[in-house]
Amino acid sequence: MKRAGRALEIECRACGKRALARAEPVYEGFRKTGERFICTACGHRYDSREATPFVADTRRPQIFTADDRETAPRIFSDSERRRCCAYCAHRVVNPFDQRCGLDNREVEATDLCEHFEPLPEEPAQTGEATPPDDDPLARIFGD
Ligand SMILES: [Zn+2]
Image (tube, rainbow, N blue to C red; front, side, top):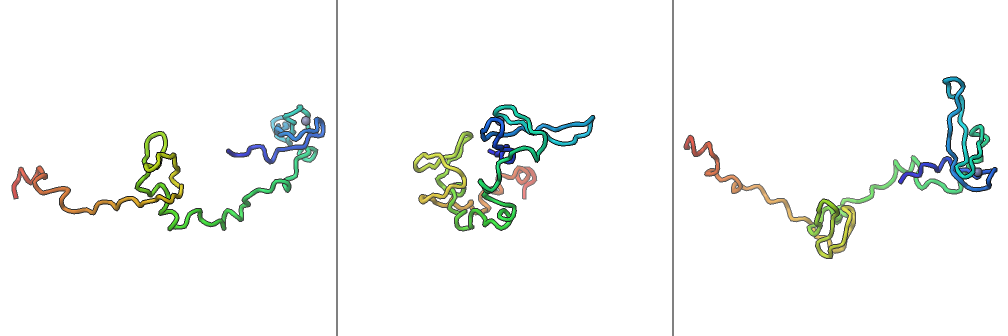
């Protein structure tokens, strides 16, 4: 879930609580001239962003910055990906969940598992699937 209110967390001077502030646009006529912030705990209004006692961001640094996101390693290396439940012969998928056929445990497609067994190879295409006798046109027109 997205933390919608993180940037709007305040240490309210009116009620002394740490609470979320609700932003409220201030209009002059039809023009938005600023923002007011209202403490959701006590309803105290702060008339501008500057006047609002926002909790400093440094106390809870973001785990990922934009820079990290670009250089972040891929979650799975290729060898790991091949051990995911998504690629496992034991995975049983139904409309409600997906389970490991070995122990009936609910799994995620991205789970890694020590009982992993690769899916069987796709059957090779041979001529057997469509014997010539099954071709209705061949029967009608002969050879
Ligand atoms: Zn308050």
